[in-house]
Length: 116
Image (cartoon, rainbow, N blue to C red; front, top):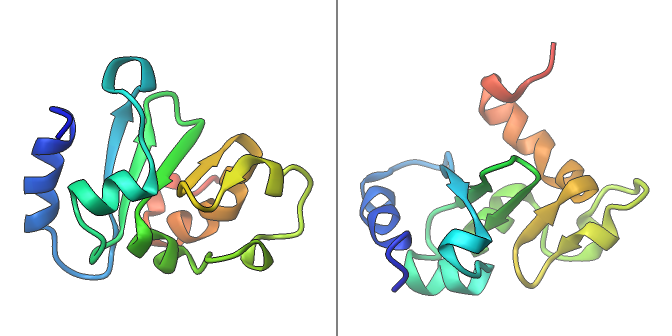
């Protein structure tokens, strides 16, 4: 297991409820590749997990995170320009304009991300 995921596995195990476990600071260049399958296998698929990239331009979610977002297929994505091209449903990866598909649920749950 990647050394960056070991502490997240322990922290996620202590996390309870339906609110996703969120961690920030992921960097592909420093931590290596990330995907929904990796999160499911190495941390778990029973609780929603969101891995936020260090520059806030992308997130990765596990299977439970996809369910929490209500996104399981392209039909569940908002009809906005650039969304389908910047969401990898199989990889649980939302980036740039694709974040518009994930952000409404995140903003509703975590008020700190609401714009004023």
